[in-house]
Image 1 (cartoon, rainbow, N blue to C red):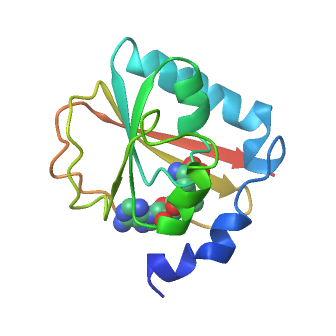
Image 2 (cartoon, rainbow, N blue to C red; image 1 turned 45 degrees about the vertical axis):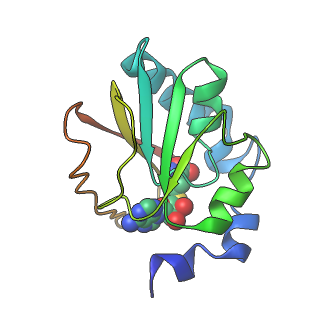
Length: 141
Ligand SMILES: C[S@@+](CC[C@H](N)C(=O)[O-])C[C@H]1O[C@@H](n2cnc3c(N)ncnc32)[C@H](O)[C@@H]1O
């Protein structure tokens, strides 16, 4: 099954659980705190930005965030929370897409149930090699 088939309209519309699960403040807060610290006064590039679970609160803290995302339905959900001027998104595969600009932080946000066996997400980021790649795993019961 392709990623575009997994992250379809139904998945996108049911992804957000505001205030609960992977959106719970105790799960998301520490990840956003750390990413804001790593971004410093610079900009952040989030691979597989999805509905903006991480990017929206990061942008609300004043960090300039750009995303790369394969799924149009996931971006449509993000757009209910932040417009293109606030969080620009490059449509495409993060292994090949290029986001213009310079970034002090490149990150992938990975939500994972504690019961998950493994989470895999290929990132070559060939066009984004300069700053180190941060990985934030939000693990919840
Ligand atoms: C579990 S969601 C995570 C979304 C967000 N990072 C978060 O923390 O909530 C996985 C996302 O990765 C995106 N994705 C998967 N493979 C991708 C790829 N090769 N390039 C860009 N996005 C991809 C999916 O479309 C989906 O939006």
